[in-house]
Amino acid sequence: MKKGFAILFAVFMLVSVLAGCAGDASSTAPPASTPAPGSESTAEPAEPATGGVVKVWLPPYKGGDAEYTDEDFWNDMFDKFEQENNCTVEVTVLPWSGYDEKVATGLTSGEGPDVVYLGSFYDLAVAGALEPLDAYFSAEEKDNYIYWDMGFVAGDQYVLPMMVGNANVLYCNMDILAEADLTEVPKTWDDLISYSKAIEASGANVTYPFMQPWGNPSGKSACMTSFLPYFWQAGGEFLNADGNPNLDSDAGRTTLEFLKSLLDEGVFDDTIVAATDPADMFRNGETAMVILSSGTARSITEAGINWDFATLEGPNGDKGIWVAGDSLAVPANGANKEMAVKAMKYMTSAEVMDAFHEQIFSMPNITKDATHVDDERFADLYENQTADFHPWPFFENSDAFYDTLFKNIQSMYMGDMTVEGVIENTMSEYMTSIG
Image 1 (spheres, rainbow, N blue to C red):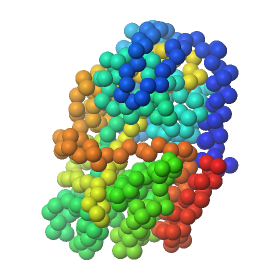
Image 2: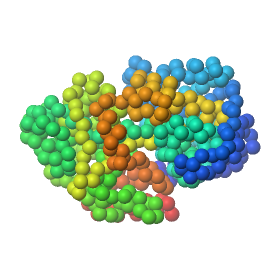
Image 3: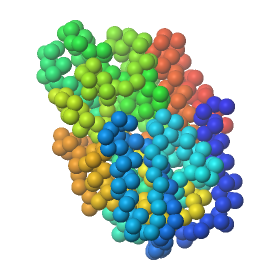
Image 4: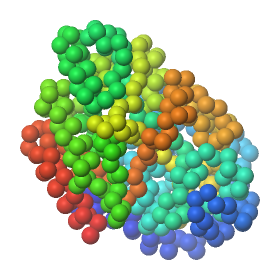
């Protein structure tokens, strides 16, 4: 069974699981209303209970060799919560690779979390696997969350945005650029290619002048940094009127032709399909330019890299910047939903998020009462360029789509598929997957 189908099958299996578990839940919320985004529910949230065990599943934002890990952080943070609520919080940090599959399996088995971190949640919401959250939050609480409306998907408030922002930008090692007599960051696609050629000609000791992760184990992650931003910069709307990927379009062709030009112009060779970790390569000075998240800035600075960043424009001056919208959710078949929501509120509180952004991963604040601790060089980006921000497009069976697109672009770089072949095969596989 294909991975995309397997995940989707697991998701829809949850519907029957929910029916069997609903009557056994020890604590359930009042019926959730379904207001439009930004509207206010008149119902007051129920007072959360205390006691019991709350299982929290998260991915890591610190490297596995870090002295102070994500697990250390969350265990320390939850000490106070456990004391105040007479409960036990069990934190499980799962690797990014295979994370979505592990979550789907955990939810289906009934051995999953009470609070779960999700990057992909559309299919889960549609399948009824997630608890609607609106009724658990007061109007005052909703107003304090800067990105509350981003959690409104598939007709209800199913997730609480947590890791929002973290914009993907083009980092440039200014010392390597200087070796090629380049004193400013590139601004356009043409600049990116001409800069890459100039760096190569300068004799700089780099593996690639510009790097994309087409060997990353996660095809979705590669598409996040190395396909979607260019699609938006090509002036395209990623979803068509039917809510399906708009790959078979002028923007889709323009994007793929640009990616192929990186190979044709000698910026890449076919070994790009084995390139896995652009962040480490940039921190080690092995590449001059790479697209990474703004939250990576601290580690780059700590590595001693003299960096600046750019936000590229496409052929017609369009910009497009991918931003995260990763969120927390409560499974619909959870046994202690009120305590789970209380833990979720604590995790996203100013107290905890300020510490997380300071000690683990720098991000913009998600609540009005929290502190902005991101690198000050990004202040203008987050204050004045938000019109160019794009989160993950929500659509059915998206993970299967990105996985197919990733593999087909790899084939294109290996000379086994044309631009038209990438479009035709990807869309054919996708349309078959959704029936």
